[in-house]
Image (cartoon, rainbow, N blue to C red; front, side, top):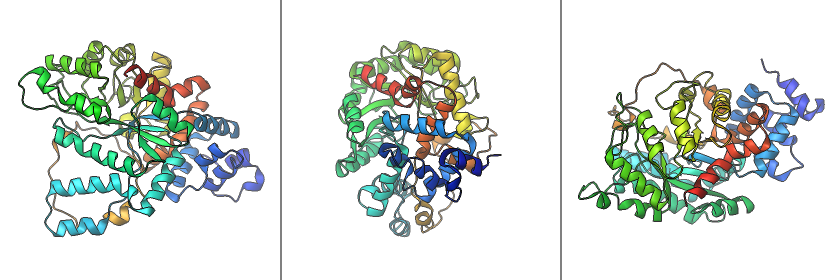
Length: 440
């Protein structure tokens, strides 16, 4: 059992015993501005997640200080995730329901609000800024394309992120090159690299070249990485949710060749194991599994086995370890996250792994605003969510410990596991920077 008194005494001295965990975290670092950004003015939601993770890790004062300093000084690049999300406008959503809006319209409205309101609402904007600051994240490979292949479906999230970065220049912007990420770090800003959850296809099938023509369009709009598949089978290959895995199609080989030519990173995070293996073997540039786990640590259909990870690493890519408890298995918390990272480093080397959280910070007001929306009748499961069943039970503590704003404690945890500063820098951002540079 973790004793808060022992921890407080070790990092702040016996005189600080009356401080809350958040205040303690702040007091330990008041003399260092960049480190202070990670630890001061934490709202109750962020503070609660920190307390849970600290209770699991139990770092010494030296480990905490080294980890926070390293985190604050490094480019931190989430290899797949989401920027902080806003709360919906519950009154506006309730009015849309009363007006008879369709399920599709309501879904779009909900998504638009969570992805844009921080650019127009001062309260949501402040919380958005606070979450970024507390995370210490420089750049997120941000989900900017709804799952599918239809260009009109894929363009919606891209438009929302373009809109918000246009309005919030000076704090967060859309990056197009590795140099942009370096500039963001130097100037104390944040940025998005954009990824889509599908390869945009014309769906006309006149010729291979004609079918793939939207790849270049989306690259020009800012997309730098694309999912080959998402759970289900498509014309490129099989998704990880299929019971059988036929591998990469003939068209899939051509699609990857075109991605390589243009400079788009192929991502097999949601692809079947055979599809992932063949994609890595055919790609002439680095391919990644941007948010996955190691099957050798916990066998799950969203994980990757050793032979697939090896092929990805040999392509010049990496496996990004995600923050989803049921994929991590074991304790399902920050310790399980570190177990997967440790395994990949030891088995495949320090260039093999990144952290792709696949989670977002959600506004403290989300529950209050959602409660204003009338409950709707039961909806059918969407096609892409037809996942194989598992018996894993996720707890609130698991999710709290690997919350997106706990990114600084991921670095602290890697310090505790005995990794060198150079290795940690690669894991928390350097490997993603290397891959985006190689893909230009």
